[in-house]
Image (cartoon, rainbow, N blue to C red):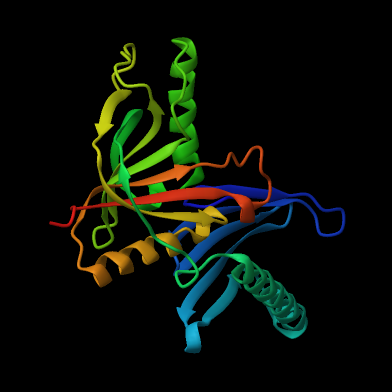
Length: 271
């Protein structure tokens, strides 16, 4: 998946030529703006804007802007608008079909179930950072750090005690910031030295609410919505951090619908 400012996708085509697209602006769940570079044909900008529609639908707007000098601009107005409109109509129809097909197979807050259990505590080797939510959501953010952690574990012949995990201490939507760690569970008592950015830390034993989410990572918000609603309904008090365990390896399981992520919310034990 390519997402986030600065990310690039490219294409080759005998019929319409080669090119690439770079994300230059991005507001999650709201809008994306891109720079389109057509090899030998100049540049343009494209954009998508999303708005809430009726009955849970999403209105999607797609546009493109580019400069044409005289008299090309007159010819474009006369002859290109029909072709462009056809392209937009076809593209939006394809997007609608893909989105609805994915929605039909992706778990929603109403279909996910919450388990209550006792989390026994765990030791992790990880990299903790304070960063923007947008940066944290980029696939490269997690993959670069987990690769570094696994590399260190390989050097000292340390075995993982569980799946790769994101540990969220804060998630500040208002200021678009998060304090979180990318981590691997390890055996307690293991010493690690050599990289000051890699830290061994504990998540203590606690009462936990757990949701098993099967599906693409982009739809994982449904698990958090389910857990948040459960906390509110039961009158529970949430305790940091929040864990996301990526149980299924996406390099092995290529079907996004079969990827298992286990999400933990910790709460104060009932008195």
